Image 1: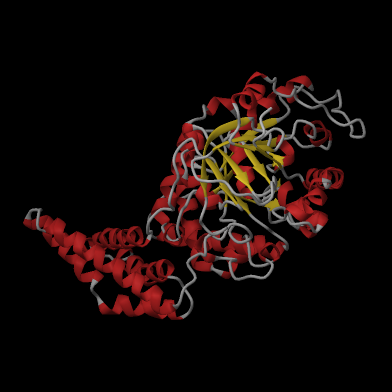
Image 2 (image 1 turned 135 degrees about the vertical axis):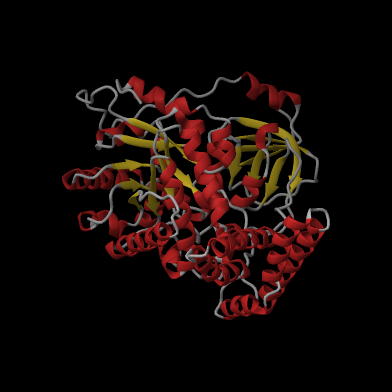
Length: 529
């Protein structure tokens, strides 16, 4: 071995990568979009101005009949009443995107419900200018880094990971972080080698770095011998279940376990054959979008959901509502909270931000008309949260039906990731199905933050507690006659999977990169996935 700088951290089990160092100078996480009302209004004013200029340019190149349509859109964009309505919403604390959507919604509804065909046709123009301004509000994408690089930094935001093209190789070496964080979850889903918790060190940009995701070793300026050792080494065989955990019962019938996939990025489905799984068990919608303007863009969301349904080709697609807050501060939500994992996140945030929730609900209702779509509610704690959300679905369904828009009411289920919900599962009669989110459930059971390296050992030792609670929860769900599955990391751990199956789980959803390993474990246990 060489005398190069060698640092030991924790790996994500995804092999190794070498490449030039990209040394991050970015903050640990985005600061979000929470700015002063005056700045929000300035952003909206600028986006409207850009939209007007684009329409004027287009009008100069088109025929008179088409120019009349564009002129109407320009007049509406310049309408002071709409601007005042948006400004009022900004004054109430809304960001520019949601304020703009709220101001346009009444106009769109009024046009759509008119008995005059000409007036009703104007609804399309209003939707067009709504979405044009939203696109102008999206802003610039996060700065990317060269393909094949080893990202070196204190931590890494999930949005930055998703903005990067990993098809050219590369890896991640983090001073802090945790193998249970969301960015680590994403790295495993794309099989990107990653080492976290390696401690503070200095490396010049472009210096060769080796990351061994299996051992957690990081080598700065490795020798050919360092690389050769890993290149020649055999990958560790799949671990077997611990002796202290029950084995899979022999009475489990074949074809009993449904194997689905977790999707966090649109590229996941474009590189995955739908025949490799039984459908999508978890679509993390907050990772598909890149800005607060996207959260307010119903049409963009609708198109994304339809693309998922088209890919699944008749197989079920379970879409989770935005799980914002915690370590996912898209739109600025949770940035200012002292304890974001214990604060306004998941369904709590959505019910407190009904404008955002209703936009997503409408997109889901419309998409559900095109395939077997189900909806998951994140971070549910009390039965009333499911009841309130279902009521919003019913209200928005009625509005869309009045507009003669094709919809379908999806099944509405809930993530089981808060201990209070798991223990009192029998009180959630209004939920159509359950999905165990073991990542968050583990951190709340152990009172150990999943992204805090100082307590990550506590988090990792939650497995026995989790398995006991899973067995109890599954039994309650079966007594209620409701389906229950698992979509957390525990399902993709070959060492724990037999115990999960023994606990009664018959639906498993894992990252695309884990499908093959999970299928192997199921086959070894005499179960077809």
